[in-house]
Length: 364
Ligand code: FES
Ligand SMILES: [Fe+2]
Image (tube, rainbow, N blue to C red):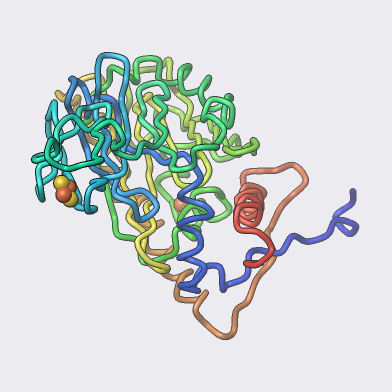
């Protein structure tokens, strides 16, 4: 199709980023029905290790039952609804702080004070409400939708690359968190992640001293996107990595709010965008390395990323959110080229289509 014949694709309307009602609806239609990253398996290494996290406004307990099984439960007591646990720790029994109903790590009720004197009470009728868990190459995901397709079916290409680029991921250890409270809607943040049209202007060091931008490409899959780029040659590099077998930049984004990424040098980090309000998003980037004793270049990689690309994106995303609130803006065109070059916004278009499919016609 020639440039003249191709129809321009229009970006999502501004209301999708500023309307609190849409933000509320997304919790059900997007976040309560997709796989949400919870933690690396090292957080739940031994039986009884637990972690409380928030998914789609629900408090969820993840707890290891045995060597092979991690369970997830809603953090709510089936007696009179008290929250059960907070933060993280290790317990073989979960005792409710209100009236001491006690559950095992399978979520079964095993004792309830005075139960023997209550006519009609059957202890086996009560348990914690479970939700689904999948462990994908050392990464623990939760889904509140009992009918959701498995993560392995939804993103098989991502799983095979995860194993190829980070074969030792399940054994890696957490070394550092880079985080920010972004002053924007979560979709502004993931759309920023999904295009490099802005990169040469906004990220001078990334494009001049880390990546070979002429090779940067983003490929759309059904529920995920792969970014792949070569790296700058030795004399131009802003940090000097040692592992010359891992010279590519690779990133996989998974609908709707998770990504893993590896910079040239082969160091893994997981991105997770948590929507807090229609115009606030908590972004965490957790780095996993072979050990906690970092080489100088590894420390420099983390510092350099936080001080340049990460900070630069945070600033520009706040500018976008401000503009989306203006009465002068409704929607603009996505700049998609036929080659799907390093400048093309085709991955933004794919994310917006996933969002439309999830939300339905009421929110167009
Ligand atoms: S609310 Fe949990 S034991 Fe009563
Ligand atoms: Fe960026």
